[in-house]
Length: 293
Length: 323
Image 1: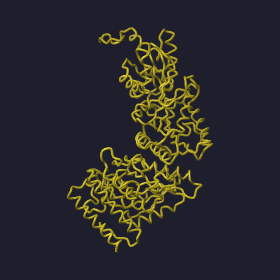
Image 2: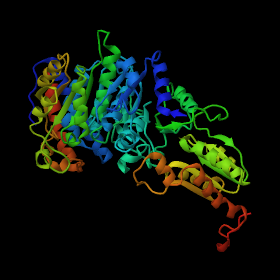
Image 3: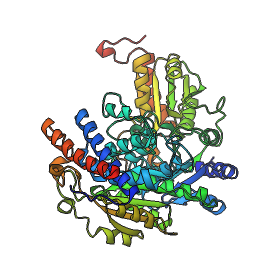
Image 4: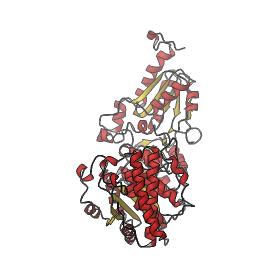
């Protein structure tokens, strides 16, 4: 992917971080021999913006009561979350070497009991959204007399929206007018076996969310300016939950992985790994060169 | 005798006055859970997620994740079956203090038929090792257990009944998590029972006493964690065991007792309950009579099972000796 380099210092720092995380996720998944690398690349930019720009969090005190919460409903993208949490300081980078190993702290789906910064265990699709609605309702009702109500972010896969439980949660979130809740749909258009639209059609997705009573925004899930603007705009509602439908590319950042069904949970060969590293490092070097320059 | 839901809601109401962590979640089940008074008194502490039991359990887990102790109340047949994966992942695996309250269990919904009967819930949920399973035998035990669940951090499932349940069976001691209570000792047979069936087991024991049989009765109100030690020790007082439950004989209390005894003290066990999951429709009392789950037929089943063992004739044609 030939990504534009942002002129704004904060944005290109985010972009640089995301390329660094991509490299880590690639190395981690390849070393483990298992994972969902292409999924990680689809949502890594979203997670980078959330954890390095948007969310009120304290890595030194992961259970800080006033923190914002994040739920990775598409739990199989946990590789992206691990590299982001480690880079943000929630746990040592050295843990990444244990990814999906025997009795590891970092299994193939998130476990809140073993990883600082994980708010909820996910892995089965269609669960995280209801949990996030409950979190937002509880935080709202508990803090509504305070100036700051913690915000809850939940990342949903687009294929995941075929699970009906999501729409139970969508109805309830709107009914409760949870303005402290933002859902992000990782809209890469692919699921395990095929394109979403050829499996069970999701479109018109934005109209669906609007009809459920959500404030809806669209953005390019790999453009940092666009992502930051979408998150900033989404926090302005006072009586509606918000959804950001982020247009993404599964495998984003490694050309031969992008938008390919076959990369759903494929692990690169040594040759593919080298090629992928080369492409990511080239972008990383461009970023750093730009920063340093 | 009174409906268990009365004590449930009364105890919740009292606690809600002082407990900021208490919340109630319903799935359009305010009336079936008898929570009308609670809703009126504490409208900000009750969340109605609509007819959506998966959402009920996930939402309650979210509340628990931010510090609440939520009581998710719904008809047992929907709560324990529709939401099974949410119970497994969002409550138990994530280990949140959610209280799953099934308020119309067994064949309480009798005429409504199989879709509304709950005869496999305990067998299914018992395999989730970290989920406390509580089945009260009387109102006092329910109130005592709720005092524990108001503050405990463990995930829990409460199997409640509608209809008449004894207010106080005068059981020895008080509710202790994971402890059975021996209500009566007997040296001919020991009956392990739970829920509504504890009272029936006592009545059956009375009937058998008049026929010269000494039948002990043990209340197993917690299936998880299970008091294996006391169960195995108590079973040694008599040569045979009967289990009695308002549940399928597969996988519930009967299954649990057989597992314990086969490991620690093998002896003949008769499981009394529903013969299979699909029960016929009808008024609950009529169904219990039809399936032989009222005191008289229970007593007859115990007698028919125990006498050959006591006479040393059970299995004698197979050459198995029971002294």
